[in-house]
Image (cartoon, rainbow, N blue to C red; front, side, top):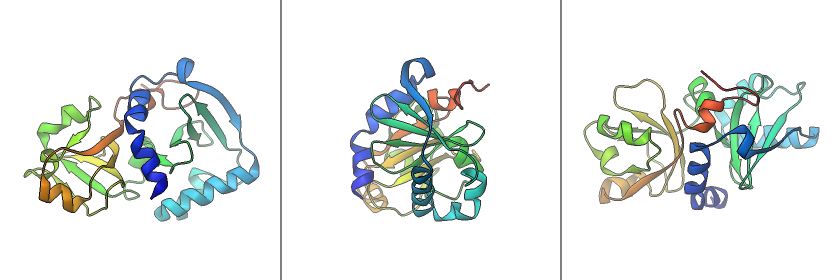
Length: 202
């Protein structure tokens, strides 16, 4: 809980960084981690996302070197063996999957769905307001406040953002006002466009 609180309190900074994220400006180093640290990262990923345990050898194979990009503002990004960004982390907070990884394993996070009217705002990086989730086109899994969730949209197959809830689902439904989810990573932001260390995605 404390780890997620740390992320939530800095969500605006995370969001702003990914919005304008570039290799030249924000990546300070790209280095192989020690085997002991690699084991720790694998263990934490499995602890946070139990559904990934059966896939962990595909994502973070034991016999492959693990590389991490250290970024500005105490952020780091974990790379898979091909160099693609798969998780990011704020300080010592939880590992958050990138959207590209989430699209491969869509059931690792609770799901929220916004109505059609909220799509363009989510894709511009805006936080998600409660009415966009409680309207006819919205729906929500039941989670407590400060949960990491996948954001889907009415009529769309794949997640378009990842965020942190500011309120519990129950409170969002009952109060139906204010910011419900802090938008931390979304389609076409800098992290999505850069995709991997050393190359930009199409």
